[in-house]
Amino acid sequence: MSSIVTCSCGAKVRLPAGAANRSFRCPQCKSGIALTVDARVLVSSQLTAGQTGATCPICQSPIAAEEMAVTCPKCDQIHHQECWAEIGGCGTYGCEQAPAVEKGATAAQPPLSAWGDTKKCPVCGETIKAITLRCRFCGTDFDTVDPLSLQDVRRKIITSEAAKGLRSTVIALFIISIAVGCLAPLMAVINLCVFLPKRREIAKQGPVYVVLAYSALAISLIYSVLMLLFGLVHGVGS
Image 1 (tube, rainbow, N blue to C red):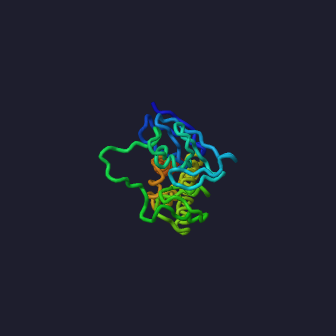
Image 2 (image 1 turned 90 degrees about the vertical axis):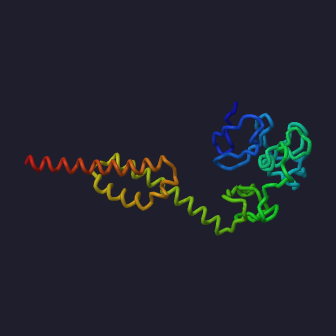
């Protein structure tokens, strides 16, 4: 039976049951989560003074004092937390915690891009593994394993900020459309001008924001019709 743990980013993560799918990352922050063959989370910590100089058997690079590391519960070999999570187990050959190799598989083909084993982080400039989707030095997330330029990262940030602003706009217009009925005609025009041109962008934010956007538009139109009918009835009565 799978269990739920809290990631360092605060997200609640449901762990996979059993030994399968141990190459596991937090869906929210993309940080690697080191799992054992029985789906237990390994405690990660920074190296102590006596451990400084240890070499990760997976990436074959020294483990710095400020880097998060895990220790294999079977062979006591120290690994980078990200490296363990990347391959889904211990990097020591023959260890019980090493990831299983499928029978009938051809020569091992690590999931590296054609750019080599390492790449430069476009934000901090540090050398990181080519297959990583998160820089362990500055915490920048990447959408692809291919090397990115600083302009690519900036475009991603701009796109992310625009999406965040659109979500806030949808929520604000929904609240105003419900709370301020006297502004219904004005809100109907605003909602039409905002939601219709950006309906595709809103759809990318998820079904919740689609429902909020169309609900705000529908509410403002209904309020406007009711105000019109109310005015006509009182006009006839007078």
